[in-house]
Image (tube, rainbow, N blue to C red; front, side, top):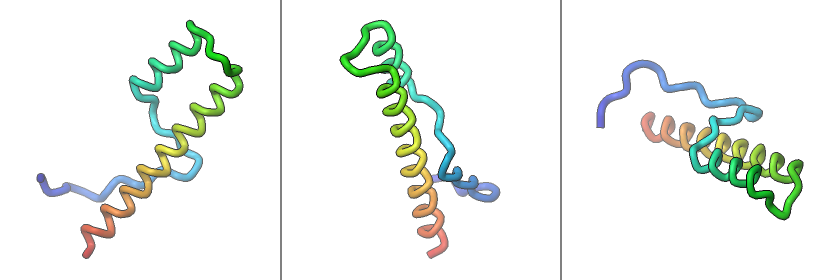
Length: 71
């Protein structure tokens, strides 16, 4: 493993969303062109929740890694 050069990246704030992944874009396009049984509002709510959840997980992993490196 290479040593880190420079300070660790700042964790995102609680309102930040991480970028869409290829599977998420594929899921979104499939939902648009092959309408699911849910409404568009429900679908967008799920995507927002999913991206926020992933940002929270990323922030937790960064926090854990930074405390592990200090020990």
